[in-house]
Length: 284
Ligand code: SF4
Image (tube, rainbow, N blue to C red; front, side, top):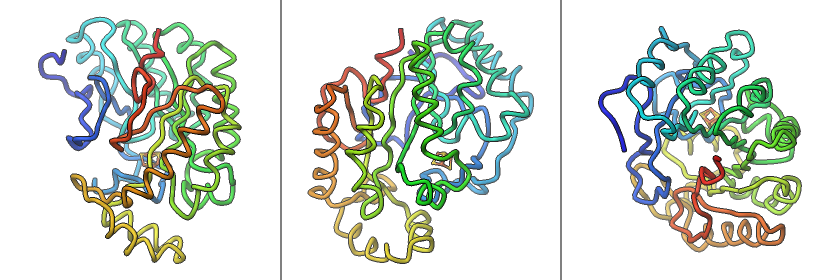
């Protein structure tokens, strides 16, 4: 599927993970870095990742890439930074990209933690698109520690509701489930979001930098050092011990089954029946 050389729209390949079940798709990040500053972020091995930067000549470069791709190429926006940082309200760069994606008739999966996405409902309803919103907790105080730059949980749920009420397929990313911090909320979060069309979830994976940050912010998580040492190391990530992961993922599965929800898991190797892990099967 993948075409010749592109500049900003790249084949999606998450660290060449052997556990990735994503369908072939492209990835596009309108911004470099991310100001949500989630302390568990998987991308902070990239220098200065928490410093949001604007890409030079973003729109002409995106358009150049789009001119090389066939219509209805699947594009995911974004996978390693959020397309709706607060600055987007002022700059409208992601909105500019959406207009181009619409013009070139691409299939689009939006992945965000921000309710700013609802500003663009007018464009999204006219596209072959679905929207995923990530949520880790319903606890506003905990969220402000885990994801200090991101909108509070209820705003994200309201955004999911609004998009859903406009007929846009919506996906809950219950991701990551954080052992000892958010795992107790699995059932409540799924109940609160039981109107969505699909749930994708995963357990917290750590690298050296994110492990250090988690413990600095939550000294009670010092035990992670021993816990994760007992798990597997896959590519550059430390996973929880398999038994613990399976316990968490089974709870997600059972909670989704209770509400008749389609569900899948991200880079876990845990079986699911949904047509895609990321919810791209929902794109019309
Ligand atoms: S929103 Fe995603 S990319 Fe941005 S800091 Fe949080 S985890 Fe990292």
